[in-house]
Image 1 (cartoon, rainbow, N blue to C red):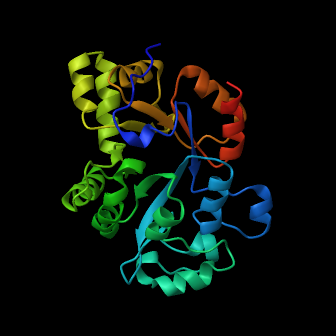
Image 2 (image 1 turned 45 degrees about the vertical axis):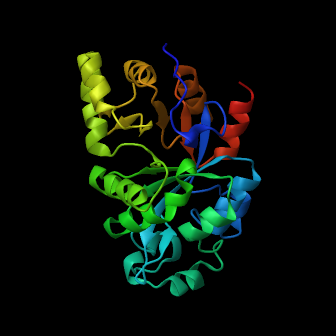
Amino acid sequence: MIRSIAPRHPYFAAGEPPRVLAHRGLVTSDAAALGIVDNSFAAVAEAHAAGLAYVESDCHLTADGTVVLFHDDDLERVTGDSRRIADVRVHELEEVMSDRGGLITLAQALEAFPETRFNLDVKAEAAAEPVGRLVAPQAHRVLLTSFSDDRRRRALAAATGTGAALAPATSPGSATVARVVAAVATGLPPLITRALRGIDALQIPERQGRIRVLSPRLIDAAHATGVEVHVWTVNDEDDMTRLLDAGVDGLVTDRADVAQALVNTR
């Protein structure tokens, strides 16, 4: 197995892999029993309190133009309210989240947790440029990603266009991941290098439907070009062990406390 060369972006300077990325913060069973939900202020604070360096979260834009950490397009799953995030003002979100761990905006997250590395998935088209502008001064500790490569690139361009000394780190969207998998299948280094150009971390599921995304060849190919491999969303402890043994560099997980304890024993 080919090990990774030193990553090129300071986002990865919080320690050596394997990394644990707290998926939407950390909500323990005790916190969930109290009504705390994912992507809340309390969930991010819990991840920080547990000593987790990396928090994975999601970005939407409210009706009045505030970037908030929220996964879904609407409030249905979290609050039972059918309204879309894009149709709700930030003060309304603060009210509905007040007994669920508290709303957290992207600006608040960056200010309140200055040592935390944020892995941000830009979920909404309208959020791409605002996210890029907000993270520009903190680009050294931010990774931007999206299922849409266009959305991801627009966020990165907004960050550099705002005057960031360097671009945030980035992980590819679905189309680029497909190109990487296809390039790895050819076994041709020039094609693999081209597919991974400009990518800092390859954040992928093990499988997408019936298609296996993660493979030993993909891990080796990524490592040979200095790209880390992070797998989402891994909540079973046996799966965590198996993937770490396979050489992945990061686990995106809802059970970040369990994953960190496992990593600490290795």
